[in-house]
Length: 81
Image (cartoon, rainbow, N blue to C red):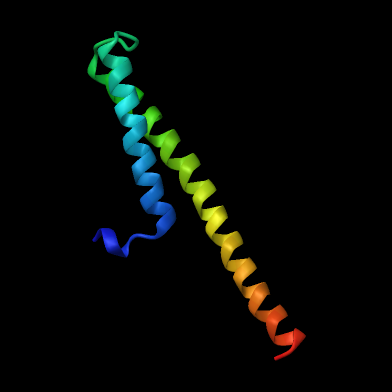
């Protein structure tokens, strides 16, 4: 199943895991009240925000690379091909 995921989604999942790991460190250090709702919200915010931002940046980068590749092919055919 991992092979079928797009590159931006793979990157986002990796960064979400990192965000969750950092949130767990914060929970262990006592920065989050030890109630299930607080812990769940902290994990959701930590992992979710890292997921969303990294996915958006990676998706934009992939789109730009695809546009540059298309422009390069079009420019190459106009110049001498």
